Image (cartoon, rainbow, N blue to C red):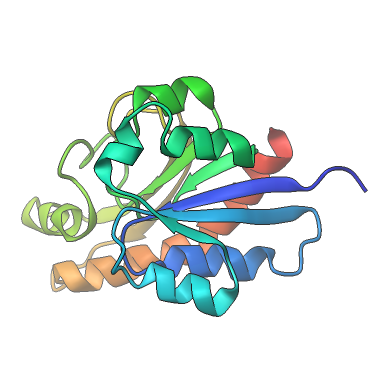
Length: 192
């Protein structure tokens, strides 16, 4: 068997996508989650990591943006892929340059629509509802120096009904993320 593929995950919130990815790869002997990084020490993702036995690290903005902080730690972990699973901060240019085409993100809309600074979570779903869209979805894309502008890897769509609330839309999006995100991570690892 070849060298294990190493994944690092970043999350800002509850960590449901982190848990889903961890379960997906739990019995895969060729993939290892070597760390979960979060910028909110009180976020539920850290409780999930403790239950799952995943190494988890919290950091502040200075450690994230200063060269030599989180970036050095990441380099020491030597990940094959960095997965943004509900991570809200913009990735520094130094990360993108150090790990070109090795950072991916899931966005809760069909990019290029509803992307960019401030477009995350319920903000996206409320904008989709307000615009009267009849469909929305997820976009999994490589991360570059701009918010939500990296090359698109995968998209999945779901219908939006006129009676759907932003909360209903969010539930539909979560189902798409759970169904597709781990498989796309696996495919990107295999192609990398």
